[in-house]
Length: 169
Length: 101
Image (cartoon, rainbow over all chains, first blue to last red; front, side):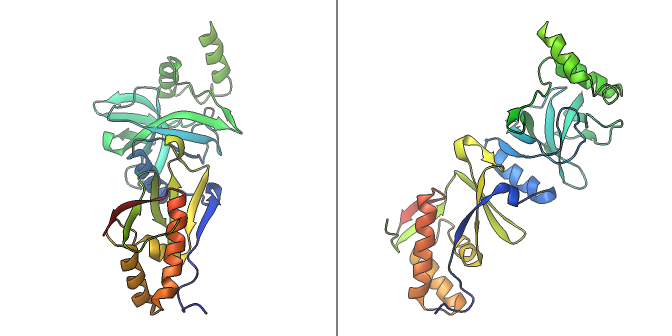
C-alpha cells in the first residue's frame, strides 16, 4: 500500500503541442533556451506578420550572441510593459534601440524596443513541414522600407511573389 | 543500471527545465535546439518532489530521507520511487552524476 500523498513517481513524455504556451511562460522558456546559446523552435500564434508568417507556423529563433539585429530582420522580443514575447520585423535602427513593427500592422504599435528586450532573430519558418521564404536576404531592406512607408500591408498579397521574381533575376 | 545511494545528481546541461502552471516541463536540447514542437517531459507530483531535490548537492540517500520525513512514509518505499525515477532520468540523459560522497 502506498503512503498517502506520495504516489508512484513518473516521468511522462508528452507532445509539446499539449502545452500551448504563451505570455510569460513562453518568454521564460525562450529566454532559458536562448541563454544556453541554442535556438528555440516553437509554434507562432497570430497574424501580425502576414504574409510572411501565418498563425500556426513553426518558428526558429536563434540567439543574437550580442549582435544587434539589422534592418529588415525578424526578431523575437519581450514587449515592454506586458513582457509578452512577440515576433515582428525591425524596420529601422535608433541607436541601440530598434523600431519594430508587424508586417501586417499599419502603425508603429511596438515603437522603439530597447536592446535588452530583444530575445533573438528568426532564422527559419516552417509551414506544414516545409520551409517558408521569410525575406531575410537583401530584400529585407525593401520590406522594411515598405513597412515604414505603410505600403507593406496593401501589397502583402503580391509582394512575396514579386520579391522572389526580383531576386531570381 | 543500479542507482547508488551515495551519488549526487544534477540536471544535465542538455535540458532546460521550468515549472509552468504547477508542472515541471523538461525540454531536451536535442541536436542543439530547444524544440517546443518535439517531445517534452513532465513529472507527476511525486516526480516533481524528487526533481526539486536533484540539485547537485543532495545524495540519493539524502533525498530519500528528506522525502520520507516530509511525506511521513517508510524510507524503503520512497527509495524505490527515487531510484526508479533517477534511473529513468539518467537513461534519458536528463540527469548527470555530479559527485559521489
